[in-house]
Structure formats: structure tokens, C-alpha cells
Image (tube, rainbow, N blue to C red; front, side, top):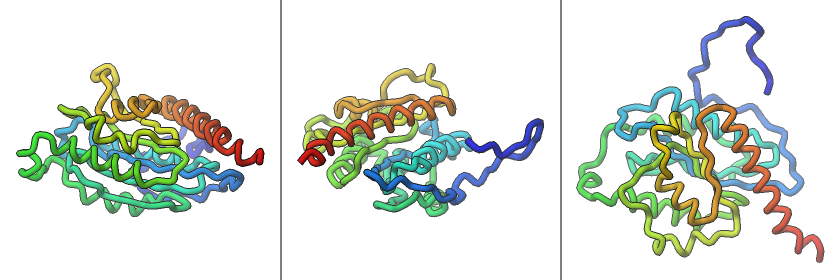
Length: 235
């Protein structure tokens, strides 16, 4: 990591979270594709706005993924469970467009929920179920990555509703951002889905957690890619 602040120096932190990412030199030998489903929501589901620390953490997760030189194609779906809608989508691109993502997220109105959704006790479960069905059933990625804070629903997506998409050939990961894990140690609804898919879940509370999680994720992706391409290379 390149240091940008001199020893004993003091500068104001950069509050422009969605600035454009500098170019990355990609490794084009066996390039990887990933799809990222990120829930841009505050730690407290009833909060009326995203706290800067929450926004910074979620963007940091995305930047860690975007800076991986072995990944050459990115698909990203940014959604908000509180609003129950997809707010940004980018398909099969060479890099993540952070400025456009930031513009799209500015349209989210936290603290305001459609009364029709409030009347339907299972609307959040239905939204998450359809999101997973649509995104897992329509991807050619080498890995699928969920990211975001815990999503504690009264009812998880029914296993029968996901049986056609959960048996996937690519690995699934969940980078669960939890600022204070001790306050909510239970697995959330997305975590339960990932577990049923025999995926991997990581708790992200500090920068070190992010580094360790991403190192492990890439190890799994590369290993499975080598295994899946071995028969073809031996012919």
C-alpha cells in the first residue's frame, strides 16, 4: 500500500468516497470475472441516512475488489434492502465506475418506505428472493460476492424458491460488514442463503479483516479456476 501522508503529518480525510479509481495493470492470463451484489444500507436499518463510516467501509470493500489485477471483468449490482430496490447496475465492465455509482446512490431516500411495502410483512423477503434468483440465474462469473451490513429478516428466502439457482458451479462469498460484531453475533438472512450454497462468509470490522478476507477469497477463486480448467488443458 502506497503511503500518501508523510510522517508526523496531519491532513483532512477525503470525504469524496466515490472518486474515480486509478487504472490497474491487469493480468490477462486466465482472467477472472466477478459479480458483486452490494447492499448499500446503514448498520441500523431504521437510520435516516448512511453514516460516513458505513459508506467508507462499503466503498473500501469495492475498491479492494477493483484493485485485484487478476480480475478483468466486473459486474456490480448495488441495492438497498430498506428501499427494496436495485439502485445501480453495471455489467461486464473493465473497471467499477465509482462516480456513477455515487450518483445513483444519492437517490436513495432512507427512512422513507412505501406504505404498500409496510402492509406486506414479507416484502423484504420477496425482494431478496427475486434479487438472488435473477442475479444467480443470469451470470457467467467465476465468483459471486455479496457485501454489506447484516440483513435481519423475520423470514429467510424459502429454500424451495432458490433450489434452481443455489446449485452453482462458481464459489459464493459474503463480505459481511459489521462495525460491532459483539452486538449482533447471529447469522443474517444473506448469510443463511450463502451457507446453503456452501459458500464462505467473512466478518469485516477493521481494515485488517478486509485484507485477510480478500486474500482468502482470491485463494479460493484461483484454486477452483485451476481445477475447473484442468480437464480442458489436458486434452
